[in-house]
Image 1: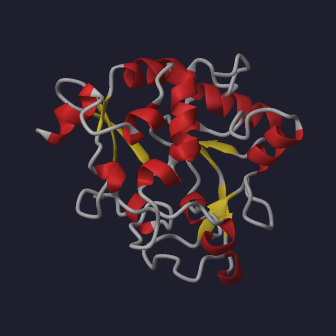
Image 2 (image 1 turned 60 degrees about the vertical axis):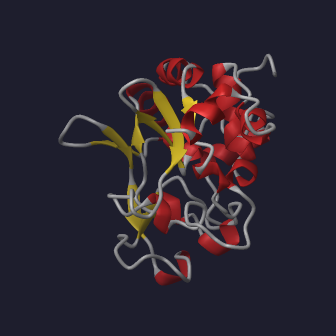
Length: 214
């Protein structure tokens, strides 16, 4: 693993790192076929409504360029702007508001990711945690956290599985492959190799045994 930090949000990821270190893996969910992100096709559909930020993320991002608002419930969120039809994907869900995150450029790219790449840092160094984790979910179960992906039936918010990178596609690779970069980022944060755990021989990892027998 790299000795260089992968994110500027050191406080935000502390709790995430602890939960990930003891999380079970939903091996069955990661067999779902999911396409790799293609901005030219999806036009950042997952960024249409901005994202909720931790206080640390809000402080860093707003201090650099603004673009962060405080909601009535006290939470912070990236600002959004109206999006014309040419800024939206061809299959943009009808129930999504026709808006886009203020931190997207004309080519639907994240300005924070572009900055990190320009500075030679990890691409997600400045990117809010919820953004780069999508569509991964760390669910708090009774006994231990569970790293998983929502099915359409479980997607009560009607969000994750309506985005192109969260929606099953029969000719796509399994999620454990298409989400390799996300899994490696989680590994850098927690000290675990999630990619190898999900791609290891059946029964090699105890998490696989536990989740498939439940």
